Length: 285
Image (cartoon, rainbow, N blue to C red; front, side, top):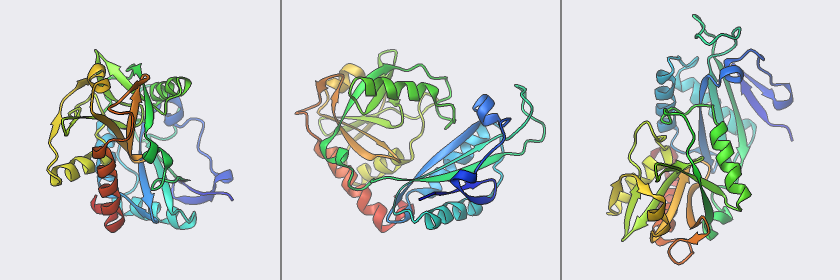
């Protein structure tokens, strides 16, 4: 069954969707994106995702072609037309088509696309079994706080991890874990959650934001600082978060079991209470 996708104001069968070969997203990766989770046909954390989108656009001096209400309506229409119960909505905005020139066009006509991907977010077996992680050097640019569509380094990291039999890569810079190739990284030691503080070195994860808020409400101590790869391997437990995984326990890093090699209690609890809240109030997690 063909998906309905969105391109510059139109809902189209995916086979009919197209954009210009001169789009700056193709030529320069000149754009930003967001991925919003959908559970029970409702979006999770939509408003924080739009807040981050607006920030990313501001950092690259690009105005959104549509206001937030229009973007919400577009997302909801994609859910309805594709009968999406669980999965993701991908949306990106580029500076649009222009003759190839490194300088920004003076009057850009942005390109906006969106599409759905069905995915088992709630009962994903990896959430129960935990996943393996492989470490890779962090070779990305310096502005990782911008959710850029330039994802080659992340794709290379993800593939390097897959080649080692792992589900995710944790990127390492100067001996410290920055983040996953498409996720936020956490360790737990003595019941305390440790995760890197926000800066230009990491993306401000929307699921991270919700989880830390829930952890505080559960009186779990949180320490926001860099941690080393050796620290991670010696942790009591580890986990990661993202819109596409929600929360996945990490049971092994570079072949080293974490804790007893099974999903830890903090990760399991955070996943459970995040899902419970999300299903009650999707936009309030």
